[in-house]
Image 1 (cartoon, rainbow, N blue to C red):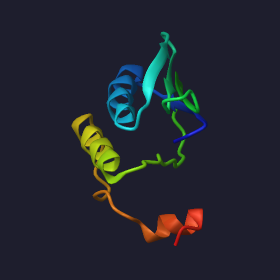
Image 2 (cartoon, helix red, strand yellow):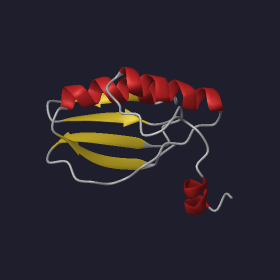
Image 3 (spheres, one colour):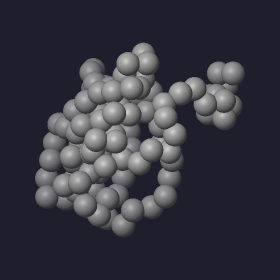
Length: 103
């Protein structure tokens, strides 16, 4: 899914609610929590991590990988149920394929 990311958030509780729900749909889960941060394992075999820390957010883009369409659908559903915004329904994006070479 992802090797590692470090993301600054202003509301750790909100980030925890959202990412606990959506990452579970792809096999990720919360493995550590403190007053200043959260650590999620992003795969079933300790193959990646995302850290959320209290701090000033900065803009960036990242994407998650899913193996089958039902994982995509579950992630999308959980994201919307937990405060995510809809920027377009799940589906293949030609512009995304250009970044990966999968056309």
